[in-house]
Length: 240
Image (cartoon, rainbow, N blue to C red):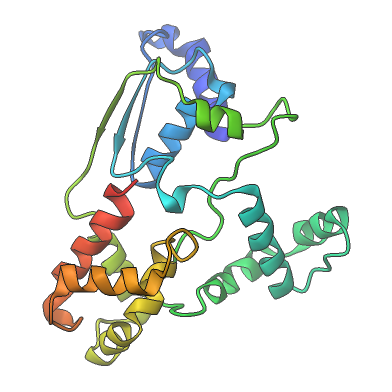
């Protein structure tokens, strides 16, 4: 919503800076691309956006979207971690609003129970009720899409190196011991980290197939980080 307000401001004021209010284009990469796509889809921006450029991401990426049911389950899990009662929605909201932000951050890694060293998107955008006139994105607007807005869609190279860098930041280094553990738990980690554990039949079998495609008979190690980066590039940024 903050981005939407900024776009409204641009629409109303850009002419004063020599801009054209009829040629407003949103551009984004990775999560920014998903955000730009959502801005195009949102009914709140009707008549404001005239074009979009999406690079390595979209609102269709698995990490950029969740249903209201999934969101409710995630909220319940966080509520349990921060000791908030779930007796009613009103009480739950009141309690969560009182929790210090640092406590949410401390519990962030507990969501990734299989492999806490690789953080993923915990609370992606969620479809809102169409009964709410101020809703940013609803199921109707998400499914309807906006075919009238021109888009340029592409990808940046080696986007998965970000995930590898994040792995190094959280573990301290790419130690052989840590990577060997990643290799052993690959079929458990990948379905969760790539968000397909609930969307494909037999996710561990699918993960094993991915490992064969990207690594063949090789193990995950410092020598095969390039393959791991390619896997993340394809599945995280190009798949959506």
